View (cartoon, helix red, strand yellow):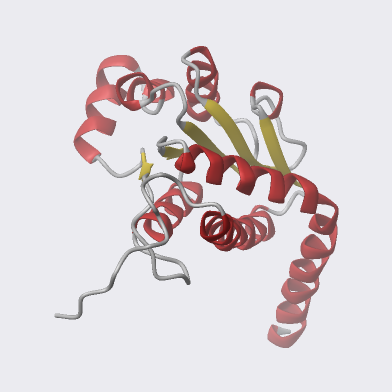
Length: 204
């Protein structure tokens, strides 16, 4: 029984990865837009709930730390980490505003907001995306199922098909790592004025 269940999980994992092969164009276009945002001196803001919040923090860490290339840190901020801001905004304005208020405070034209939602229907991500577009930020959705209400609000939506949340999350992690590698490669070929790929490592 345990082995059969494991094989079913593995089959589902392979199935969703087969399905996202058709998303190669959207994935690479999103990476190009992220790289251009950073090249132009903008920053990447990220928002999502639950496992998607963890993805936001993971992706921000790969950018501000490093993925594979030795380089200067890249400007990325997860809007999911400040418990005081999240609880203050949630208490005073409602949970659906916890990301939009932060976008209003921190986002500037030329920045990019990445909204992550396995359902495509998270109200707080939807509000953040809508506000970001109003304020001149570019918007990328990393979504699941049919893209939900969020996909039409995004400048670019990468939608992983399927109905199994865990499999969608696994595909999202793959896409996030692909973005990190593609962005590092893009910046190494065409660095910004800040020279993102020319950091020197100083061992302690």
